[in-house]
Image (cartoon, rainbow, N blue to C red; front, side):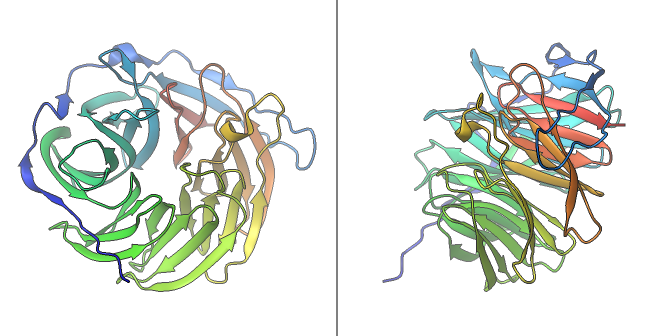
Length: 375
């Protein structure tokens, strides 16, 4: 019997300012510009040796605090001179936010605008053409399920209360990607891949996928998704028809963050307890796998691969409490070398990594945002 799927939608317009709180004041007190410290690259005890990397920590930004509650930095999207950082709350309660960072001067970034979402977590963010698209989980009783996509308007570089929301299936929306005409969003355990018309937010396709964790558009307009338990990457055409699917080891921890990144003919996957993978998207052949680092002082469930980013010939991997790892990749993304573990002091579980040029952006939970420059 086919399941009946219900998608609820909130009309475009000004939202209740008790639900979305906009703040465009100064946030200088949260930003430490004086770090400018050299980061020591760790040394591996076996296998491949460390790379000769020179890194500078340029800025640290504490996460927002609302009514005494500290939010967690969960995801970053970088576009030109701006970084969009989203926040959520650990546990059963819902509270989240999004901030726009001006990063035109990487040594002196600042926050242009902030929105705090009452009764809503934000898991992922994508930006295009003065709109931030947010993958959310909400406690709002007006939706049939907690998973929600929200499109929030930006005017003159500032967030506004002009918003549209679309209800999805499952307990949380996990990732979002935007193309010229469509929005692709994944939702978790009982959800799947939803494709929406970008102008109207009407659903054009839905594919039921268990434990859907991430999605990215290809240049062709097709989409690639990542699922967990077990780990799978699947390729869909622009209409949402399955073209191929490949299974591999990893992503065995339920309700965990796992992201993917596209680079040429390769899909780079953060596979949780399976480490990081590079997979040929045409054949499904695993080019290489970088296992989870072994450290008896760390909780194995807290030192898994959450996110990956590729810029140039460097692959960056967010390994939770094990910190950030970097590796050189060859031109065909078939091999890696010079694996480099990078640790940060203090409360720095690396949940997400994004890269632009020689700058690395790290979402470190309650440690906030770190901006690192590769010299």
